[in-house]
Length: 262
Image (tube, rainbow, N blue to C red; front, side):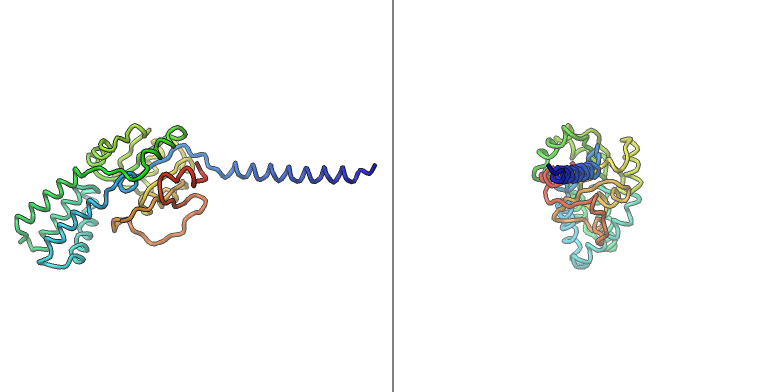
């Protein structure tokens, strides 16, 4: 009996077995050991920007005797950016910037009735209705058994606490972080608090500038969930992103199905 067929079969078996082990190990190696999944809040878990745009519309209407809507919006944005170091983010900061801009553009001649109208609309903004986006609670329920979930948002502390309380989502989060901003240093502080490395952290949000890019630069993972409108300050030019640590998913509920990291 020739030993050739036996040797050939043994060689083929070893080859396929080696390939199976190799690719199996590669699959295991490339799946990250994510421990914490962080969610942005505004325009990721619930609507936010449309309420700000409604207040801006009232401001634009009040400024029509002085300039066009486009011009007054551009002037408002300049004021917002200038006031960020003083007021930070949130409904109160936005209302103050609108009132300051209205007085400046009207040369302090804004009728008191228009001033009061803007002020009352600003108060309403701080207590606007809380509208959860589609599939938010179901997504959090699906992820909670496997991961520690973080709410990582920025803005006014009282404003964000109010919205979280209205959302009734607090029970899903291991930790809640309201940041004054979302720069690299802010995420570094959060990672130190959680006592983890960036490679163990996944951030999910609608803003490329605030939620995605800083986390990727630290070596973490990020998923972009687009929202239909974006504040001008959050807009940014396209940048090269690491494909092995970044992806875009249209809906929150699709994360478990489409994301290979979790």
